[in-house]
Amino acid sequence: MRKILEVKNLSVEAKENGEEILKNISFYVEEKTIYVLIGQGGTGKSTLAYALMGILRFKIASGKIIFKNKDITKLPTYKRAKLGMTLSFQDPAFFEGVTVENFLRAGNKNISQKELEKTLSLVGLDADRFLSRKINHLSGGERKRVEFASVAVMKPKLMILDEPDSGLDIVIYKEFYDILDNIREETKASVILITHREEVGFIANRAGFLYKGRMIYEGDFREAMRKYCQTVNRRKLCKFRK
Image (spheres, rainbow, N blue to C red):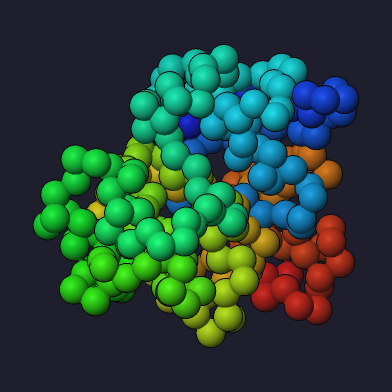
């Protein structure tokens, strides 16, 4: 299977003080697969996501980012987006009074009504009921679904999702992972899913374990989860500890 993204010995610093946040990070993502990045809070997962998208608060000190066989290490964010990369933040901005339809069309002004309805169906929402609803009147779970839909309508080649499962009730984790898998199947996009949840093993193709700014392990999800549990002392809680 071909690689859509390859990160080679990437080191990242904070712009304001030069503090090293990521050190020699290497991994790759194959086409039409879900790559899971796991690790505790504050270990550099979001920084890596921002660096991949070229967000300016961080500086790439060394290394390369290759996307679709093109070196994008020095490209600005908007050019990476034009190539087909998109980033969904852990706490996306929602504007009071904006309808679901207008929010989704902001990501793709040329999307047809039929495509819009189909995208909502992928995330388990009925277009007749939700297109006219205001974003700020939705429940937390409904907002998460709309967030997924807003990424899907952009028709990206690579979706970077920063802890989209944050704050979800444990009962509906599996449901949201199924929705994400449905979106991947429909759009044929690759996904980098940033999380600390064990349940994501349902859909992971490969995984990386990030700890204190370094990639401790990169490869099989179960092994990544095992090393995560050992390192952060979650042996009693981790399903994959053996």
